[in-house]
Length: 105
Image 1 (cartoon, rainbow, N blue to C red):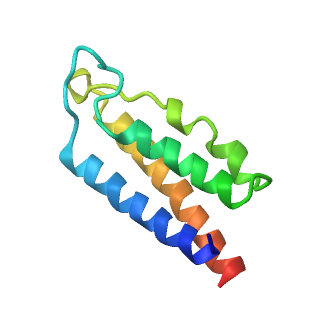
Image 2: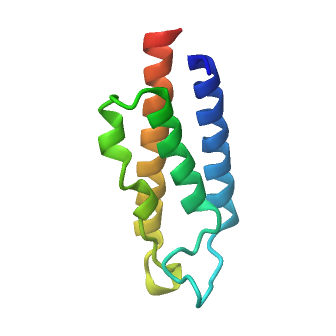
């Protein structure tokens, strides 16, 4: 894949992230610490995308724990906590896109 392909995929992942956040949480007794279906898979894909681009990129170390992020229920007063987690994820995705634009376009 070319750097442009990585950028396009990262932009698609941001759109998916926005969609997951817009849908809001889905309460489930089975997986109450992950109230956003599809988010963990998205994070795993993002981590692999960055690693596939350059496994030596320092960003890899910063994002390696993203798939294990835990979200709480808004019912328990965790809405602002969840918002901060989404901002953190979006920050790293945008950082990767900006890196590609700065160094490969």
